Each structure stands twice: as structure tokens, then as C-alpha cells.
Length: 231
Image (cartoon, rainbow, N blue to C red; front, side):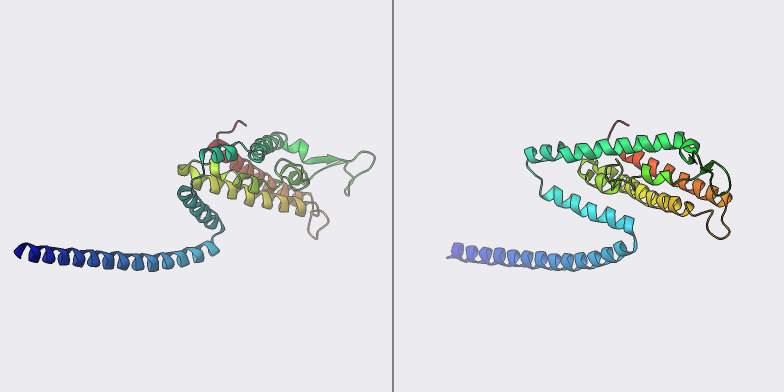
């Protein structure tokens, strides 16, 4: 009958439309997959060249995964209030305050006076930034800033999405300058003993170390502001 014929034609058209749609979707998926592979390769190459961008990109991927795999409310609350995270918060604030104290008392804290004996050049007191290593957490595992960059990264889940880049930049700022300040402090301890060395060279290392300490403090300050902590 005509009705049956029309139904047959209509069914054939529907099947053809569905088949065409699946082919289109499949083609798009294939192109998307190829494009994603190319972008991933480019990203990996870029990350290998830029350590800071590697941190940002990696943690952005983690953030995307977290969106897809959102934990139950109870689990999220437990993670936010974990003892480790609270300890990390406290240490960051303590470390920031200690660096501020060091900078406020820079001359006093970077001057060592030897009682009962004289220094190499006959003075009882001499300038040295060696104490900087202690304040930056390179002398003791119990210091608040011991492995502070790792502690800050453990708090990444508390960072607002619109401040992620600022957060990772601040962590990187702290880590780089803390390492440089420690290196300057170590080199300065041999400043007068090295060929061509002298008090002027030690003073140069002291000023360089101070700039690094200021930058380290500023990095911690940004993290504290982003996490809404109380210094």
C-alpha cells in the first residue's frame, strides 16, 4: 500500500541520516584525537623547556581531572581540614614571619661576633649571610620552611581557579630565590679566603642574598594572600 511504501521510504531516510551523523561524529572524534595528540606533544616539548610552565600545565591537568572526578562532599571536607594541610599552612605563615624578622634585623643577624678570639683580619665581628640558610629552611628538617615549596603545592586544592597561575608563579619565585640565597650564603662563607676575596666581596654576597630573601618573602606573601591565611 501507499502507506507502507511511505513508511519504508521514511525509515530508509532516517537510517541514512543516522548513519551520516555517526560518520560525522566519528570523523570529528578522529580529528579531535589527532589534534589532541599533536597539542599534547607540543605541550610536552614546551614543558621540558620551561619548568614553571610545566608546573602550571601539569596542575591545570590535575585540576581538570578533579572536575571530572569530583570527590564526595565528605571526602573534600576531610582533605581541606587534614592535619597535614593545617601544618603546612602554619609553617608557611611562620616561615614568612621569620623572613620578615630577618629582614627587619638584617645587619644584626648577618653580623657574627667572636668572643675570646679575633677573626682573620683582627676584628671581633664580621658580616656573613650564612644565617640566611637557617631562616630559609636549609639547616634543619624542623624549620618551618624546610621543603616549603612542596608544602605549598600540597595546598594547591585550596587555590581559587582564577588565581592558579599567580599561585604557581609565587611558589616558583620562592623556590628559585631561596636556592640562590642559600648559594650566596655558602659562597660568602669562603669570600675572604678565595683569591681576590675580601670584606667587599662578602658585602656583595650579603646584598645579593638580601635581594633573594626579599623575593622569597614576597613569594610566600602572595601564597598567604591567595590562601587567605593570617600572617
